[in-house]
Length: 498
Image 1 (spheres, rainbow, N blue to C red):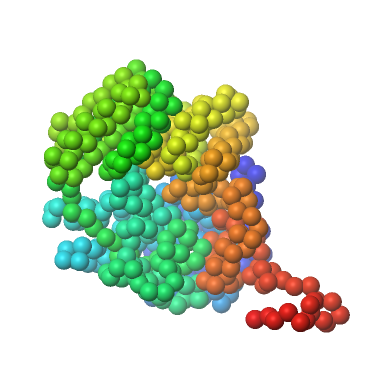
Image 2 (cartoon, rainbow, N blue to C red):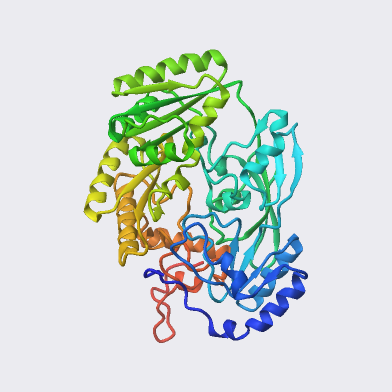
């Protein structure tokens, strides 16, 4: 697995595999336990397919009580657990471990309640992102966060990774749209955080859990906010001679006080791949394409369209199409939504990155990525949430050529270092997982990482939940407060200690 280091398998756990599998079958009867190697292959990786690993056993519970029993059983026997949703994670967050139970939540796939007066939906974590919108659209409502994988990704996985999507610029990430969760701790305790109400008092534990990548607990129920569809939504398709000009246009639109419902950008390779795949009517003679969606009252949308057109012209736009119907607006977005599979048609393999930068740094970072592409001799197609600076460079390589995966990983690491260097962060919505784990010290010092580890220890003191992810160094909780004792005497005994 291309130099990736995972926690050393526990020999005692591996030796008890038959016993553990038998006990899992008692907890989850029927077809909820998968232990045949050929059948476990379907779970050996998530969306980051460069890394693969078979689990100890796959367990698919159907009730909260079963989840609690599984976790309590594993906690009492020091067995590691890796939670998994739909497996669409692109950071290796759901990568199995050889000595770990893979806890798959896909059978939690029911919507439990639709509450229109309170504008919320209560769903099990295996419900797809798009499934929530489908359930409420007949009443004119929708769920705002919309990752490109929304047809497949689960709402529980969205909570784990704090997913965004093309409309997160105006309507927020998962964190801004989740009101409550039910979760199970590693010791089997069932907790509820938040609910249908607005923010609760005390520590923001719901905020801690959103984006926690399966390290703190297993989500078994999610309460999300639904919104009324806007009166009008229209999109502009704007072409530019260069990505730098497109990036500057993005900064100028936001600088003018305009907050589009969505603002996405693709560069030349991504434009041509998407058009060839979807036939959305994208212009092929430009090197950057901006999709800007404006929503709200019709009169406001018409006014803002004129403003955006003027800003685009000032930045050298060569083409500008404005959607004249709902079908045309959806066609504009169809190409963007299909950009990832479209790029898969022009390269044997691609490595999808995820970093976030200040918007004003977009032209500089795009130029930097172009230079890195030349340095490594690998192509790159850029597809990203331009409005909030969340980049998704797709590094093109061929895994069958010796050394190309390593080169792609180094290229990706340099992109993320560039993001941090200009004031950005390592991830926007894909998470850290194993992909960015060893880059965490680029952004956080040892004190920062220790503080994050203390939160992990509060929820999972034995580090049994998703170990080997996010933190670049495996440590026991006791090591965080380590103190050298000499001859049975504390150093500086006069200092008060808690």
